[in-house]
Length: 401
Image (cartoon, rainbow, N blue to C red; front, side, top):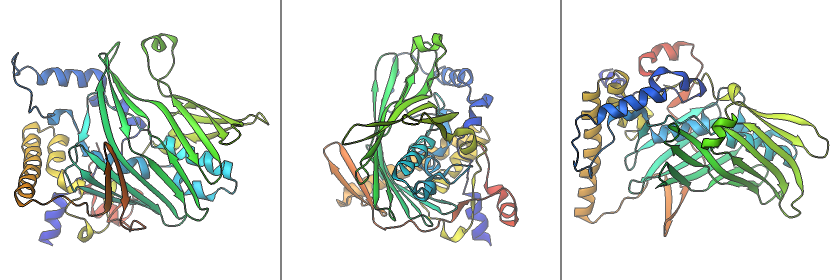
């Protein structure tokens, strides 16, 4: 019992990022900017910032791995991932894959960042029939590997994700590298998809948003979708356009026959127009799927891995949630120092890091990650309705943002 209490104190879970989080005063642009400016009061001109670390005041109380997990399992409405397999017609399955892909887009808080995962860190969580396992397979550069499987519908999702940020003067352009693959095992169909860029713009007003082109292609059916996430330019602001708008199309790859127009806003609704019949249907509703999201709960304490994100960063998250910046900073330093010590020990012994759950191949600047196991087992952390004895038992474990 004492061991259980110790683990409970060192496991902090927060609810997934959802649409309503943007309205919280703590994360409004003006408040974040004030927080950023306050951090520079004690920095003198000419100070060496070579080893400058992001202060905990600018950290969200979650690891980047938790954010990736939320993108896969975090929806409150219909089972979008399972729906990809339930549709009978290939064109309907592609539309469902498009809807699931769009559901992975979440609001980005300008100036705030999740923790940079340490090497070997993991996040293992389940939502219904969906089991997700993520591992940090490289620290420099930071590379994360994701594997998710849907037990009931036999759907498999893998992706290897890493970033290439470039300063463009008035904004930072973050190129999100890595290929996403979604397999419908029962249908013998594989969907490959790109990832959008992240734009952090300073003028005319600080804002962070998703932009760029995303292509979703199925070789077996010969169908593909192309989505354009529109950038939020200075002139668009005055035209009243929303940076979260999406325009695209669904076509046959070989004939280039244009079948559907895709349009809408990823934080509201996305529609598909059948160009032959003129019929318009809603294929995705953000309010029904990425709002009112609930945090995971602990189903089995004994199965929680020591590398679990919620455990690795627990004391840092506790400090942030309490706004105890000193204790949060000290706890963050402990985590980072431990990683540096582990690196020194490996270098001294000539050992190289081998990921536990993924095989990793690096070709130049490109990374490819494949899971070692064909399916992801049910996780000790689960998404459940906010009722019942299991919630009451572990309610102190779940502290929402």
